[in-house]
Image (tube, rainbow, N blue to C red; front, top):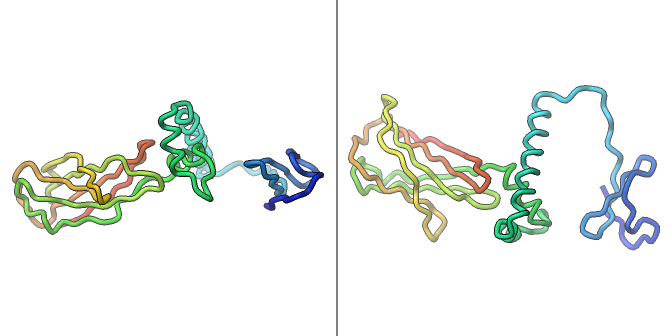
Length: 186
């Protein structure tokens, strides 16, 4: 791929010429090699990725029709993501991730605090906490609260034993509804 600069012959040109493809991106002419056509069918993984990308395009189209959502995604424009639509597609394609948790304040008593940190390429909109006993019984579940420093805090509401083998499931969500989770064992 190459950018054409100050060439009067190719300025504004788009389409295929021989083995080259010309396209216009933000008032720049981009030249690249023509794609190779293959007779081999797409693998199931390729088909799944194409389907997910199509869903991302549909999501971005819907978001661009809402002025508030478009303005929100416009805040994510940078050198790589050059439009609100591209930011929305990237947000759809990349799920959030729970990166860390602080379980030192958890002792199984009401008012105990579980802190967590999650990241996403655009924004994490929610984080849920599930506590499951070693026997697989759900002890407690609920949403965490976003703090000004970007961390999430969950305050226990009911007493339950903080025994070995208790699992803390943290799930982060982003604007398109993608989920990323992580489980910690006490």
